[in-house]
Every structure is written in C-alpha cells, then in structure tokens.
Image (tube, rainbow over all chains, first blue to last red; front, side):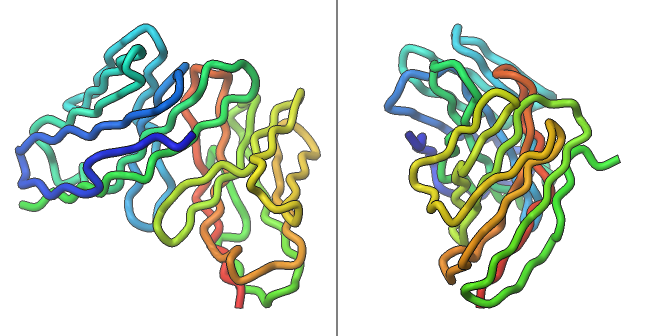
Amino acid sequence: QQPVQSPQAVILREGEDAVINCSSSKALYSVHWYRQKHGEAPVFLMILLKGGEQKGHDKISASFNEKKQQSSLDLTASQLSYSGTYFCGTEGPLTGANNLFFGTGTRLTVIP
Amino acid sequence: DTAVSQTPKYLVTQMGNDKSIKCEQNLGHDTMYWYKQDSKKFLKIMFSYNNKELIINETVPNRFSPKSPDKAHLNLHINSLELGDSAVYFCASSQGRRGGYTFGSGTRLTVV
C-alpha cells in the first residue's frame, strides 16, 4: 500500500523550481504532504481530498488526480528553508481510523 | 505548549529488555498513531487508535503493544527488545479524516 515517490533526490539552486510526484496503485481518499528536516519530526504541509482539488501555501502547491491516483507537489522559486525530505502519505477510501501509508521520501537540497 | 509530546527522547537498552514510550497530545484530536522510522527514513505505520477501534498493522510483531489510558494518551510498550527494533519512533495525532497529522518529536531507540 506504500505509494511511490519520484525523484528520490533533487538538488536545486535558490530560486529554481521542483516537482515531486507521488503515485499509488490503489484508490485513494486523500493525499498528505509532509516535510521533515534532519533530526526533526515530519511537519504537515497540506492535505488533498478526492475530487481532484489543488491547494497552495505561499510558493508550495499540490494537486491530486483521483482517477490516476497521483499527486504532485510543486515548489516554486525555492528557498534555502525548503531543504528537507518530502513525504507523501496516502489514505484509502475505507472509513475508520485513517491510516496514512508514506512514500519513501524525496530528499530536496537547496543551495545558494 | 507542546502539542504532541513523547518521552523519553532517547532510549538505549539491552536486548531482551522491556521498555515503554509515552505519548500525550493536548490538541483534542480523536485519533493517535505510532510510526516507526528506520535508518533509511522509511515511515511505517504501526498502530492507529481512536476511542472506538484499534487498528494494528499486520506486520508489527506482537511484542509491540499500544496502551491508551484515555483519549489524550497512547503509550507504546515493547517486550523482549531485539536489535532490529532500533529506530526512531514517532507518535502522531489527527482529527478525523480531513486533518493533517501532528507528530511528536520522536524517540530514538537503540538496542545493544
């Protein structure tokens, strides 16, 4: 049930853009995105619910294609503070306690 | 005020011992979780629990048991610790299926 993320790692210069992809083989109810800095806990960025919505916060936005069971996270004009490992978490459509299954992560490094 | 707090932050113990990790959340969330993050940074769901049901990931050994004295606490007890149990354990909480997860700061468990 683990989603697949790509790329595994990416290095950007400040101001450059990046896209991180998340794909599941199963039907999804929601997709979450988190960022984890070294030695810290994952921090929630946003949640996208089925219905094909898009969300954005500052220069980070995400989309969810329910039919393709895919989501992408777009980072625009990257800043040094964007560095970290990004995880998508997916939840299936069954009701009950929502269990997120996390992808293997994408390590993003922003350099000056 | 810490939203999700875990204790201890570090735990070093010998093989075969029994240990517990405590978790408390003051967010009023209805669901709590335990995740294991291994050396490759893979975040794996272990348990989720709300006041109605406990969901156990089938791959978790029965040496691991969650204990919830009330809605705000979900402790993790581990029996007969093994070397492979060494990892960072994160507690998290969320509200319903539309809320993001708030993670605790993690407990780094080292079994020697």
